[in-house]
Length: 183
Image (cartoon, rainbow, N blue to C red; front, side, top):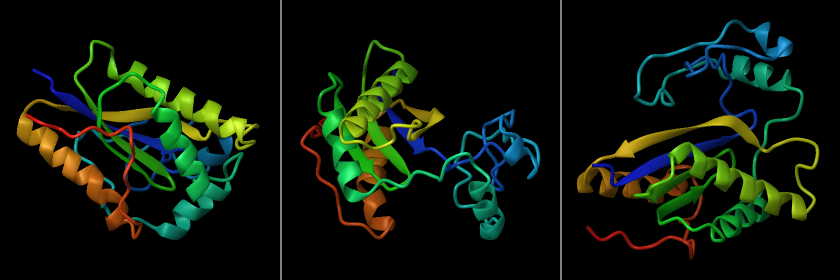
């Protein structure tokens, strides 16, 4: 039985299809990025985020993008968080970092990719109300979700998301939309 989902939504330019560490992409749709090689499809469901990579190459790849990579400011992150509070989903953890968002969504009858689409759409609408990202989406096209099948998975994922800002050198985040998880 699925108790919830750990969702990761990245901003535009954060994780590229030919990312040096690997990606879940099978296609590089930008001629400017293709000069750095084909898609780096990996077959693991485990995160490859901690793999070593050439930071200069990654920066050169990001410089080749049509738009600069999106990095949310504090005010933009707050707008994203407030937009999520308008949605009818049970959220048990939320962390909004400059270049990606983590959330733990509880059981739902909707498909998780639909929910992540709702989150992105609401956040984009709120950001544009403030005049941000009028010329392009702040989000990468796809998102990543992990099924959480038992109470220990839920608790581990919630603790991970709550600790994510601290590991990134930011302050702990408290969002009113987040509910206490009780098993």
